[in-house]
Image (cartoon, rainbow, N blue to C red; front, side):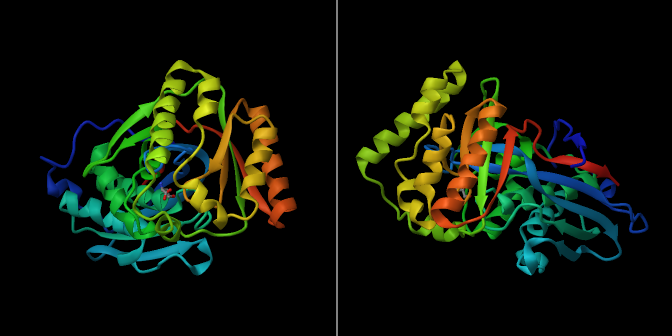
Length: 340
Ligand code: HSE
């Protein structure tokens, strides 16, 4: 995978931006290309509030100025023809359009989306498309939107892609890291520290789980006892990360709320989780709404063992092939690969 420059630190939002500076020369055909990484959200106890970015896979968006106004065209590569090709219902172009709207730009823009993240995999695919779309549009137009503004624009795209309103995939895909997203109208993102050696293993089985369906089965209420366990573990995991206390981290990597209801959507899940723990992982669980399963490990060697053990368990227990990823936490998030 090609490496690019990280996002420049941005000090300002759109206020005071000169619209004349935001016109794109339609004669300039050289694209701006952006990569946004996959993410693992929830991390056991942190339903909708914890997320972290992986190094790979990721989605790419290329944008260039063309004659016309607004999103003039969208082409999609990957995704088996199932990613919306209409700019009004595609996560990347909705996010890009939102950036253009904020910047007051009526430039003509052609968009190419390359899906590298499997659909309905629990790896934040729609979030990555939306992030790449927002960052690419901003870079093309020289808008310099700050991270909060880009997050808000990407969230609009993510909402269309996943049918739900949560920032635990968008936030790490945009800015990298292991983050806590405080819920609210404008989600606040708090970066959490990670102990040296923390490595993720992910097994993605060859099935799909639609996020919307996986959220619908949760209902609206949880038993008080489950709430107590969950907020205890959520707070404990944060403390464990700050203290680099692997025992505390391992103790808290569990989910009393969503996973018990969602496990039935992923054949073999209990045995796959058990296999990861047997291979030495500190904890394991559904990545987002699944079907991917993550294992959080101390060191790459353990993570590689856990990935292989999870893939073997998916095969033995459910007859499912799976792809695996072993990755440290990606500290950078979205990257501009070509500046146009
Ligand atoms: N936090 C979200 C959920 C992530 O679990 O529904 C969806 O990928």
